[in-house]
Amino acid sequence: MIEGRLSRRYARALFQLARESSAEEEIGRELERFFSVYKGSDLEKVLINPAFAAVTRKEILTRVIQSQQLSPLTIKFLSLLLERDRLLELVGIVSCYRRLLNEAKGRVEAKVVSSGALDASVVEQLRQRLRGLAGKDVLLQQETDPSLLGGLLVELEGKVYDGSIRSQLEKMKQRIARGQ
Image (tube, rainbow, N blue to C red; front, side, top):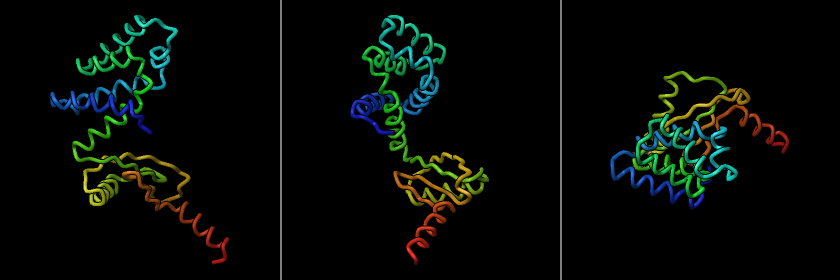
């Protein structure tokens, strides 16, 4: 996710306020929880649509916020985004906030893609190796892609480590085509 300057500014401000009250983890979870309900839903379509009156959009947001039992800081923040027509920035804000939180806690996110589900022991071994590589705790997200055939594809700190059979076969194919 590419974060814009505005998204980073809002995320940093929220993170600072959350940090002052030692609630950065809680605020992060609340932001993620609201975002999971909001993104791609009818709620998003209504809240960003200027055809609906501002008062109506505010009422709808208030009802959703109340149903999720969010903290006062998160409520004020989301209300501010709505008032300033900045809800379109929420994707970048959530991404940036997550990154700031991980940096502050000495964590890094990584994604592993495999052809099938991995055993818990394999996942833990991979996490330990990535921890050694990054020098930080690793939050590992797993995905499956049957087209890999086998092996792993790992994304860590903007780098891709491709140990998939698919890529090895593709490299072999290129070498054969070049006559090597």
